[in-house]
Length: 266
Image (cartoon, rainbow, N blue to C red; front, side):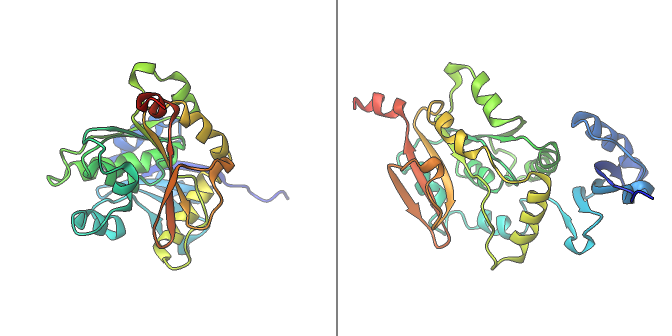
């Protein structure tokens, strides 16, 4: 007998009052909606409850669940201490960069850095190609923006492939800064990061097209492209940046774009 092979992912709701919203979500991201009793037929389940949207791996129950929450955990700590610490992200953007500058995050993922950018006062557009991660991220953003502390944040999420978005963008609406954070191996020092990375790798896989994204980004950013890398990782696309900013475990490679040189008269 051929072993039963699970389907990949579906959407369900825990409480009856969440069913309509879960069905709408499934339709929006072209995912199947199922009754909660059918969960074991799928490898992953997006579960909507009154507490928000979460992702569960039915084959790896020890993983627990993944929910994007900007009000708790490591990201919550970073947000509460924006003024008290020297933010590497702020340095990467540039001390003379005006607030309300537009930042386009090509690889939003869990959205942590993009949300930090928004709290620093910038206008942020997040791109995420995975419908599953996009659904989780939009849910996290909606809950965070309902909090009075973050309700004025200028941040939006677009579910799109980065290359498609860049090739279709109006030249008059090019972003000032493009941010690129291709996936790299997580640190072994944080169980939380390890769990998040497990989910991301299973859902999204590796960013195999990141090498081609950087050259494209350099032709679509008005001022600079910022690439986040592990501290000792090679330069993305073997392109040497103008300079780098180092943290304990990571670095930001800063690329001034051809448009910047033209503005400076170089």
